[in-house]
Length: 410
Image 1 (cartoon, rainbow, N blue to C red):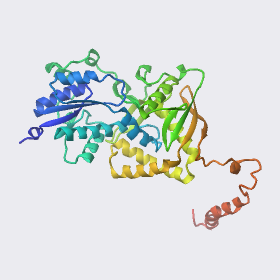
Image 2: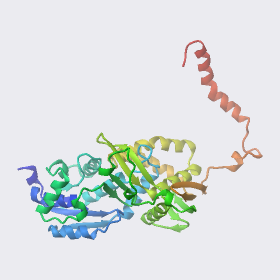
Image 3: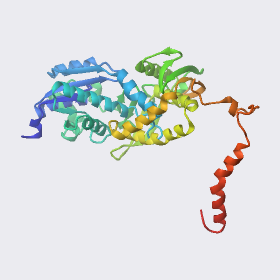
Image 4: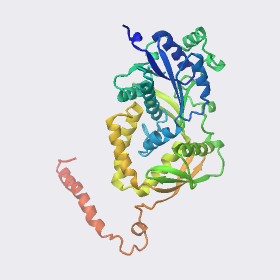
């Protein structure tokens, strides 16, 4: 029996776009199996009902279209932001953090409907194939994974269009031409890459940006806001309590209006190549700055430095697709423990692409004005103690210097 004959039912991560519509029909023809579609609303800003109608047109009987925005922000975005996560010092991981949730729900649906396989539309050149499949196998070790881009011969846009026409797959007019760039979006960010953006020496045209206005077009007056945190997570803006998804949506609006969150980078993909991407993360950029400001008065110095030291490793795990790995869970436990005291209010000023903290306060603040003041501290700090502190720290330097003069230590 061939591998194709082994598959009776497959759950497809389905957007309703050209690629996944072709994949849906290709699965039906190649594997002669029942296809179940799963479409997740992660805040990408597109109407999802057309995806349902398209799936119905293909004869799909089990169609899942689910609003996962609150789960996405509460259980994936916020835990990641507790670590102040940046990949390669810049990227806020908007695409990376969405993949484990989609994969998790796919596997849950596969279990519920008795499917023996899952499928995705990621290409064989990118990171997403790795992220999807590492998550699948972590959650269901014996699952069959179908990755059409690694199997079929539809290796060009013209071949995809030809297949679509042969199989009566509706194609919007703008898809018939060569797309200027590809876009991935969710509530945290939008990502644009490929085609006209492939040369990193050429600046992106303004048409590329979808989530933000240009900083130079932003208001000439700064916008001032406050963000309240409880144990590391934002819970309110300007004193108004909000759900996780509602809060991030509002931060996105504020960021958009002030030209905040644009990023043009060349990153290192897990599969080995470098890739140029244009990212817009307006709300996330504000949130990162606010969270770091809140931590600045509530975290012990060594705890904060330890968090900063493990952050690059944590970011790399998420970027590479290891959300469900034991090491990510271990790091998450450490990070979450650090957040118990990160409660209070941060005041931020947003102005022409910039995010500036202008005030922070917390019932758990470690900042003691009596100790740090330049005025009379009334005995809160004995400056003579610094002499012994300095001498002890200088001991190895003095010994090294003495030996060095004799041609020994560095």
